Image 1 (cartoon, helix red, strand yellow):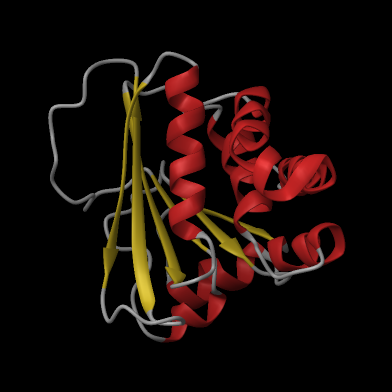
Image 2 (cartoon, rainbow, N blue to C red; image 1 turned 45 degrees about the vertical axis):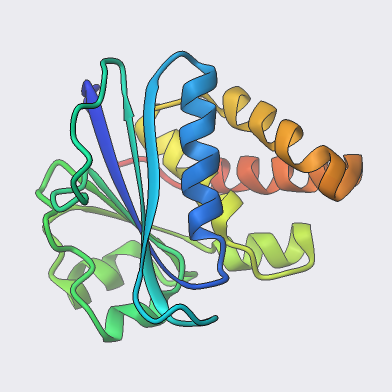
Length: 191
């Protein structure tokens, strides 16, 4: 991805899948690297499993807008079943990135969604079940985002994971989340 002053990301998920957490981790890691950040969510019906969007902005300069993200640079899909209900590629252009949690190849989604962006798929659910014991695809997808964009460093994300999760999950849980992010980073194949 070409370096930009402002990177806007939209996460498509269902409530409870960790999209809001992912956006916050990404933004806070950016803040730790001296960047300007925003992270906010947009909910429909506020119930577990309901479709929702979360947004993050990361910039090297002050962010002056507080509008919703309508032309994202990156769209990240945590739940591939959402492809049946909405156009997840809205606002994306050929130089943008579409990242989806699925073991299916990216070409499948490129064709199915007629997505103009560069499409990548990562089996984030498989990674998280293997390393975390649960279906939390957010950390592997964050690793993939970092590899695809270089908007922040993997080290900054790791530090954010340590800071946020050490008390809550302990050292073992922290290391498992760091491993999940690294596995997502390693799994995505940059085109």
